Image (cartoon, rainbow over the protein chains, first blue to last red):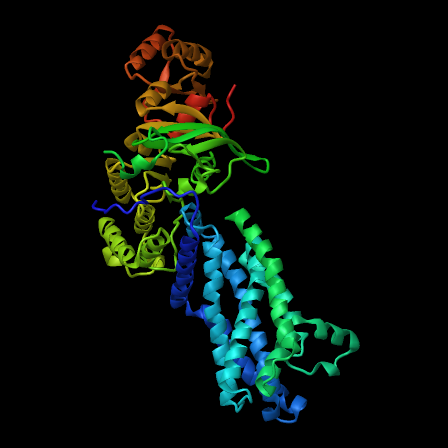
Length: 268
Length: 327
């Protein structure tokens, strides 16, 4: 058996930052490779934006805004926020599944940074969020939505939602790390996600709701995200909600990065 | 042959030194005080039935599990304190395939190579080399779900050898393989040691441990119950089992005494008057049979069998697995 020696020239006490980044990128690449074999993994971020945009626009358009065209500036930001947040759930479910597999034992026995598998999964998912964003805007465009803010505004909104989604994905990554099984993670995540996305101003104006619900909708971070997107796209304005959304994302990171990393390290 | 990495190692005499390893899962004492010393450059077999604690022991030695008690070191590096260094010295082939089912063989090896710090070019070359030496070239592009059990094990082993680790753990490498594939796997394992690596393998098969291992630890209920070279173990366990069927159950007591006198070991007598005794020296059968004739004990059947793992345990622990001892 002819194998050239590539064993480490020295033994390292711990991985360097550069090694950690390279290993995380390799793990992200692994995530993308898997998508090639199981493209159905992308159903939630491809079919959903297309289907929901069509469905909700024609279903609610007349009732809420008089006609479909007037509803588009309301619904497209709503659908974008809703679809991208639904996409964040997947990380927990897939990571839970991955951790239960034999290959994870090998990762744990390799001299790699403990955080690399988790970091790789989180990185790979940003591609999914980009896909949701592109598809939703394309659908909107085809149905006649031409935002006032133009391409620059669309780019800014895209960066905002993708970053916000990445922050939120840490919550579901935690669910994935501590959950008992993939299906329980799915169940818990959906229970968190449904009230957050539907009890917001994503689909209907909040002022038609009972007062208790109005209160919840106003404080719901998803409402701030939706409002921020609407203001940016339709009025070309960076308003209060834009900053609140960024603050919300940072708060999520501050709480959930330590929690998730700690829970994950205990298992890794 | 000396392993190339040996100049970097703290303790190059012992690949593994474990003292009093303990791992409990709730009430289940999976590993209950295991001590092992494994010299570098040998094949060390850990023999035991399902649930004896073999996999848990390997998991602790390979840094996957933190021991509840005791400590272990690999080439002088503590498996808990210096876990990252230990991981640079070991390769682990799990009992179930520790490769990515959804990816192809090439992709698996490429990814593991990249994780181990090889450049893209080197990783591609390494994957191709390993696929060739493990005879997996034709299946390289297929997803693993289409692989046979033997191919999967070979890929698994190939993945453990990317960094040419000086210590390789093989957890039941041949369980579930057909006899021909098993022989191929044995050859591969022997080649590994020839290239300077130390191999720790677990097995349920006495024959496998006998064929491959320089030393064997027999493990049961989380404890090492015997340790030594295959020859030493055989001498203490008996290379074969003597089975005698008495015509009359009444002779059991006398027969028991005779066998204890001649073999120096307690035998097992079933309610039907069937005697089983481990036999180290086949020549002693003559003595036993002559003594039986002298005492007018009649036999229905005499046979000598290779010992099963159950009988090995019976010999070492003095009890038969599962079945209670017959008084």
